[in-house]
Image 1 (spheres, rainbow, N blue to C red):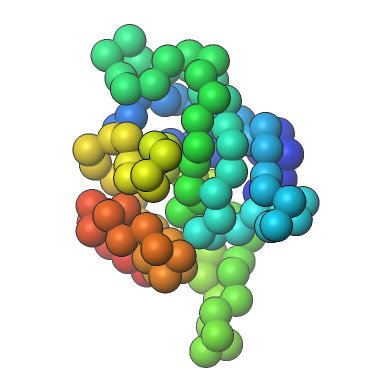
Image 2 (cartoon, one colour):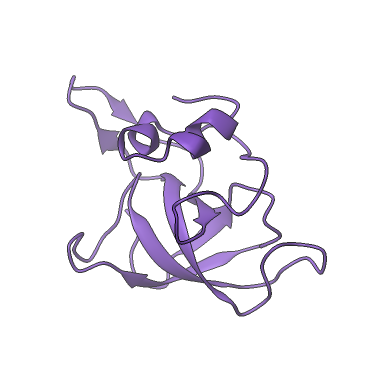
Length: 121
């Protein structure tokens, strides 16, 4: 579960080093999970990246440490909390997606992120 002030690892090459959650949509509630969109602030950024340090960005959560129950009764969980920085159209700002992502991201309508990922779990 991702909540206010949670720190996410960037799962793309947008240039961010850490992402801190500053906003979750009221439709979602107080806690976000895989496939949800949250507002984050970039904490540390590469000088050659697409994002700047302190910039407010929109992020799709692609991995969580807390397990997620699927409709078939199975659970999936990951080693870290990670997200992908997206633009207003819902496309990733980076050109690569690093590490595995959950299939709930693809089901949420972010097929471009799923196609860039090496593995969809």
